Length: 295
Image (cartoon, rainbow, N blue to C red; front, side, top):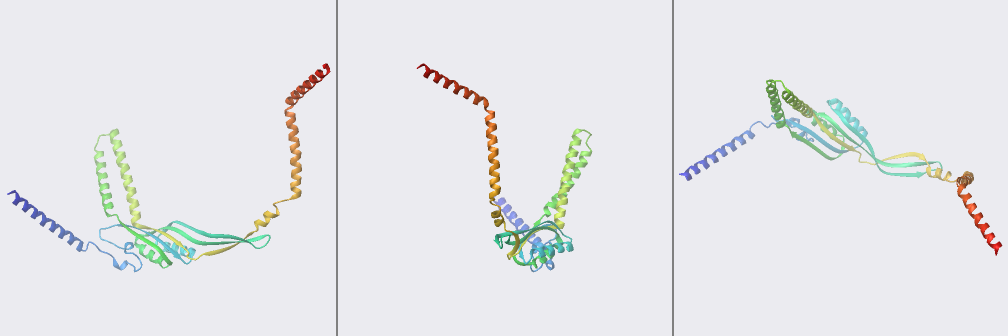
């Protein structure tokens, strides 16, 4: 009897699992997953433009590429951001020095030859709806693409959790208001308000990240630029003023005079020692003379 009951139970579980699997497959086969294929550019990843029903994405991108002219490309990117409603949060343009040599051209002048590459690191915020358009724009500025990373983080579950947390805090606030006035009520209300403020702050950050996508851009020039900078021939100037006979003789005479003065002052400062030494020498010599006289 037990064996028959166990067999019937296993059969029922198998049928239920099959039925559940069919339901899941049917859900994925429905129109819940919708991608706006018309907005996907041929040169831009689907992650930058995809729209999925009941899904929210925080999009970021990293672009590393070489351009013909870094300064012109930077100006074009900034103008494009103004056009689409984006903004720059960081821009660091610099010249990476590859080599530097100095060549003397005369006794007074020389020339500095510096080889360098211009580069710029930028961080920009782009309206999420315009991300694909913006990436397509900067893609046209490249002469060589080193790398491009596009991320679309699904934050749908986090949004639902934030909504549930807001409802919980509102319910907690209502429950606290029904308590009797006292120190515990004040502490509970303060803690609940602090949690509500933190939740509101997180919601605002998430909302901002949904509206604006962060794009990190690194651009540099593939060619080596050369700068010719006129400078002074420092080596010749060093040799010209390296040694001056008359000036050094004058300084040596003055320093010798100061040395004599210092020696004289030193002897004066130790006069007690000199006096005692003189007296000792005098008495020793006088004693020797007396001994000779007696002999």
